[in-house]
Length: 281
Image (cartoon, rainbow, N blue to C red; front, side, top):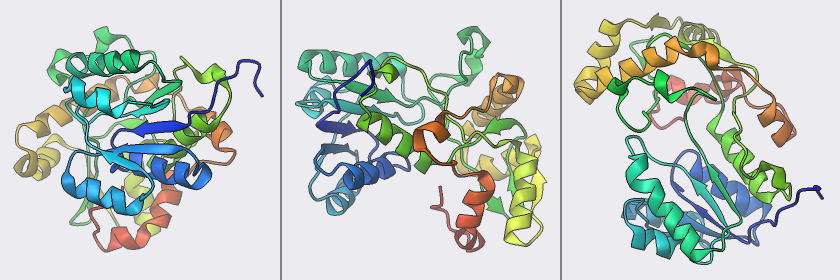
């Protein structure tokens, strides 16, 4: 047991439980600690029905960050909370509600919150043109061309994020409480042109790369409208601050194994990618 110990939560609330991070977290906790009571949050009726079928022993509920009463009901008797918010969520309008609900219930042991931000970046470097909240990051293969703004970022498999979160909940090491951990796979700090090269190699067919503004807006504009420009600005912001990133071994130490690399992920999902599956994340 750690010198600085914490209790392992007997009940855990997972926001975004139907998502590509929340669901693997629920699967991990169900497998590794079936005695823990899970409460799974999803907004749509369809997603709640799917979760209830997949996790019949869990409590499946709806909760809205902007609705204090729904949060109060969600956190009742909860000792652990995983917090993730959707793109465009207003921090000022939502997180105070969650804090209020948790303080009123006063039973929480551990809250783990996932943020998509540069580590230790000054808020003064974030341009106002980006607007509030985070932005979705998705890439596509279209006409055998990888279309995405060029910039360099570290990578991590969402399933590895989920396992890290799960292992932190199941750890009795209290030193993680209040800590800010930067997560990446410790291996890949890549430009998107390099990803196109890996795709070409693994898929066995040439994948061109287009990182131009014209290509990006031409492809995403009809689908996203003005938001395509907002996304472009965000990725150029990432490019301007890319030296802030640093690969580390936190994920590997926590998992006790090497995290999934970009090449490994593409190899695993090769057949789905070749079929043009849109639900591969």
